[in-house]
Image (tube, rainbow, N blue to C red; front, side, top):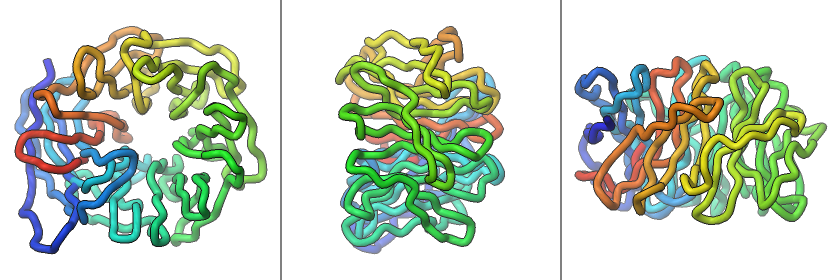
Length: 327
């Protein structure tokens, strides 16, 4: 049974208008959550809507949450863990737009990874399997495209298309990146090489195919499809074959993320209530389970497994004692 998250954290800074982003950490076996630091920023916007990112322990998939970071009046981006060092990367609002920042699981060692030009946003990101390069989407060139931040901070544009290219997800071999694009007239899953030299479409799915997530084996890509309020979770092979639906459309699934062992997929859903919660399901469509709970007005979304599979980072908004979006 899911437990209420505890909000942990430092003191609100006196600096004017800084957005808050906190995270919650879920622990197993009814342990009290570990104290985590909070981060604050200017209250003006963020990733998809303002949200909070939290951490959830997953061994027995029991829940006890503790805040890690918080954001502002904008959506906080979903957290992503690089395989090697386990830091959490997320989007943060700034006076100029949205930037990409990293932090350790305890909220320490915060670091600016991608600084957006004035008025631009850099939102969804994913670490390469070796933890050295970061793929992210950004409208810094006037259109939403996929970019790559290399070791040392060099940024390279991988896609250049009039359509919207977003939601990057690395293949486990580090050679390709899946993403969603509406370049064909409706959102579908595409794959681009890490050099940007070759792009191909994976799906031709009605009404759309969105938010791809490569499995740890590289044999499957999880994605979403459906209409507003009725979105289901599917998987497809990278060559476009073997499409299989895992959840009913009424579940209204969002933002899938694979467990490191490839056995489970975590996602958000607002079935049976006005606000989102974090859910998990087996790769073959079995073992559907809700992981988080909370009063009306609390929304949990955009989860991501940690490299060791013990925690899930997610964004949360409206939790008691907090007036902002947290991680």
